[in-house]
Amino acid sequence: MNPKPFGPIPPEFRDLEALPWRDEPTPAYVYDFPVIAARIARLRAVLPSQVAVHYAIKANPLPALLKAVAPLVDGLDVASAGEMDKALDVMTAGAISFAGPGKRDAEIELAIRAGVTLNIESESEGQRALAIGEMLGMRPRLAVRVNPDFELRGSGMKMGGRASPFGVEAKHVAGLVKRLIIGGAEWRGLHIFAGSQSLDTQAVIETQAATVLLAARIAEEARRAPPLVNLGGGFGIPYFPGDVALDIEAIGAALAGELDKLDTQYAIELGRWLVGEAGVYLARIVDRKVSQGETFLILDGGLNHHLAATGNFGTVVRRNYPVAVAHRMQDPPEEIVTIVGPLCTPLDRLADRVSLPKAEVGDVIAIFASGAYGASASPSAFLGHPPARELLVGADHA
Image (tube, rainbow, N blue to C red; front, side, top):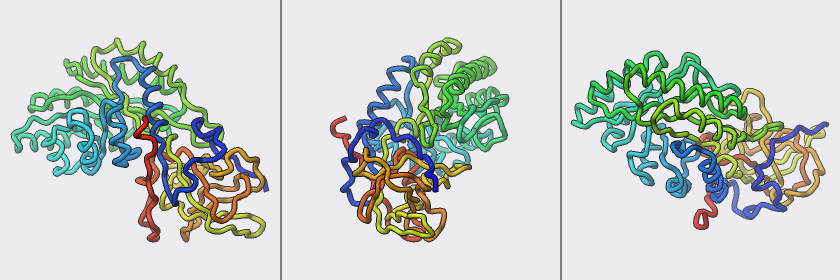
């Protein structure tokens, strides 16, 4: 039986002999905050000065992580009233934006009362926001989310250039902006998001250039410069065999040459790229089993905690995340194993036929690149197993 490859272990952990948290009770997510802080600092070093950094908290909304990240970024982007509450605990309302289709009237009212910017996803949502603002006697802060007439090439989830529940079609945006301003809104700008999880550096560069041009065109049609243009994000991280990290330095340099097309402030909204590679999921082996010549390591956690690693969160073809035996990071492989969780479903497969050092019952398996869309994006109530612990480490020394 030939082994299947797994993704690259993030460079911050690659040279370790053993993970420092291997003795933590499991299952657990560990988020290494110095890795996140260094990632934010690296991004700021290459971005033009007029580009703010926003954190999209859907990637990882752990309150302790939000509290640590908030002082290092310029804004937080949320997608529900629940996320908005968490954001308001750590950042002023004026630096928070609320996106997502299907906002309920109660959510719109809460955002207007708090002073949070609503990214309007449709003309009818804009009308509801104006009506609710009038009812409250308050001027709503409204930006318009644009469904661009292009997509981000190579993105895992394409969010532009097609029919979509997200945003207003580009050709209708200028008219909506005029109506919102006439209706009494404080227009806060444009939010243009074309896709996510791209590892194609040139595609990101081209999409950002197209985004700036689109924003300039809309500004000309609306006869009003937007106070802020949120360029979206789309920066991917390496998860799978063959994945290569984005060239952030090239992206920053290219973006600097585009921004003179429109006199405004900009923001980049990132989640996964800021926190994804800082997280490690740890689960302990509770059983070794050989079935028809194939060795299975059965862990105390699985799909219920880490849906994405099992290939059941937006992945068409299942591939292996970076994986290691936590106390034998540099040891040579000795056996081919399939790593599964404790759930009664064949979908609960964290690694398929990977070559690792031999691990026994009680040893800990580490799944890397687990800092984004992990615990909060997994069906933790499925089959009634306990939730995974979540630990933020190193924040006091960042």
